Image 1 (cartoon, rainbow, N blue to C red):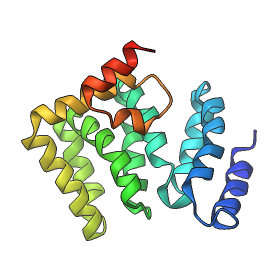
Image 2: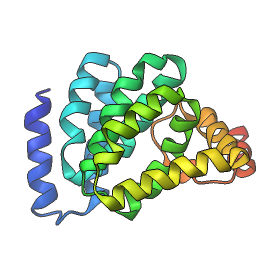
Image 3: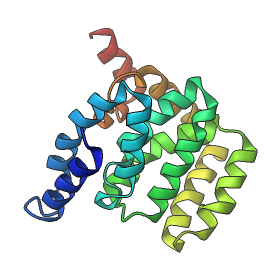
Image 4: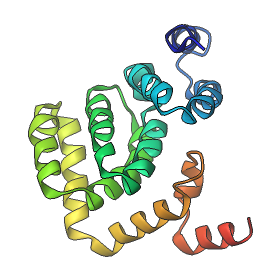
Length: 183
């Protein structure tokens, strides 16, 4: 599969007949994501290309994948930091903010302080004031709300191996456990 051509085709649809509707875009990107996830090099090429497109609409799905890997292999932080940079520079809206919040909280809770300080200096402080405010609120949340942060981490840990499902991630932890027990 030629990743660039496929993404260009989807970008034409997204900004054309889909009129920047995210649902058809996400549905079109999911099979590509699934197919490429088995080959890490191919997936990383997809990540680099997709992160800079569609106004950042697909970044939460890419971040999910790399955050799951980061939990096992902390060296994957490089990809997460690149996605955060792309997210900070994208045209993300409330939907992406809501999707990214539990993922970013989990990442910030699991990451070394040194790496977060570096990210803050290199990306967050240089971002648009509203983007900077969003990230600073998350950083403050992680520091001040250890119990809630722990719940975000626990929820992601429970479902990190499945394809991105933000409805599932949004459930209260008790309902999430019940749903997973029934699966």
